[in-house]
Length: 235
Image 1 (cartoon, rainbow, N blue to C red):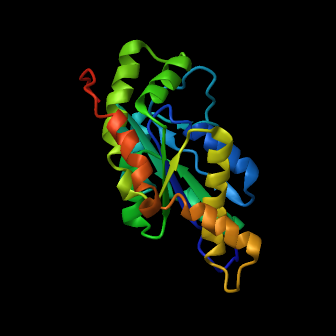
Image 2 (spheres, rainbow, N blue to C red):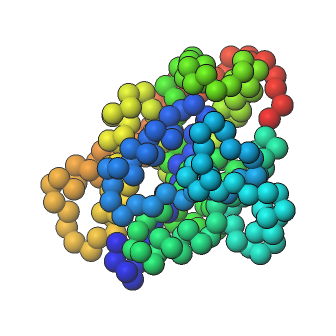
């Protein structure tokens, strides 16, 4: 990225269990000059999570102070815990000449798109409800009740897919990683003031396969798989 250019901001959202964390970790290995914004949260660390690695864990009083000071690009309350993205990460990325990657939910994504209208948004979908339930169960992190609650939340979240610029169906991980990489590189290529090489054109074409307008038909069966009645749960 040229020092005179603003950093590109990439938003990735997905229902819990869709493989978003794995995809973002692989993307950061594959694409240079891309920084990951580590969110702030008021929830307690889980398992082997470390402060400053998965999240910045802070008390509610500090989170409230940051809200009052206008330090968040977006923030939301999710299942009783607060999560937020600090504006400082965007400034830091810009100073380094890097682009910024945000891993946030649909609430946060809507706020970022409102504040940064040129942010590029990507929604990751599982291939169907059955696969998502299997993935959530195999993580062995949550009880059956929590898994059902996450499935209810997922049903609500995937209805927002058409608010995003790109939709990525994470069926085969290797292919999904390549598509995600193509999206980031294609958005960078669109800023170049020169003709693209044949290889660069192929990257843009691959990314365009995930454009919202080009995936609606593929998304409909996935939406249908979530339309079956599920146990009600509090979000």
